[in-house]
Image (cartoon, helix red, strand yellow):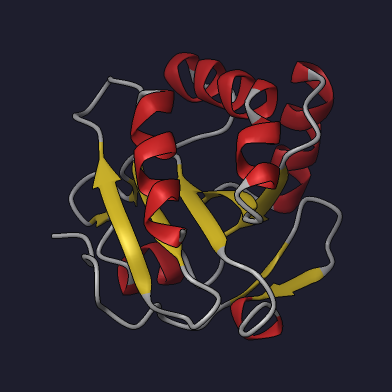
Length: 153
């Protein structure tokens, strides 16, 4: 079960697709963060989702939130995926320890070995304001993100 509203967001430090460390703690008191976990780079549904999220980047910016797509793939795979798809999204690698951040958020599928499609809107205070997930093989609708971002107002 994924963490729900009111839970304190677990801290993390993950490399982005360029290898730079990204920490939730660095955003605390500064801006909200949205984490969108995806199972795998280059998969059909995940690729469609990152394209939609990239196109919707103004929605997140207007809410003052920083969006990160999180995958168990290596930073190298995420960089190649972003380049192939022409997206500028922040992408974080939860490669090692394998899926540790996804586990902390309750989004890791232990039997399958990857993160489920779960999303978390985290306030600048570090509290999860909204969370939701999609069924296997299904994309999360952009409307779910819009509704979740309203919890930041």
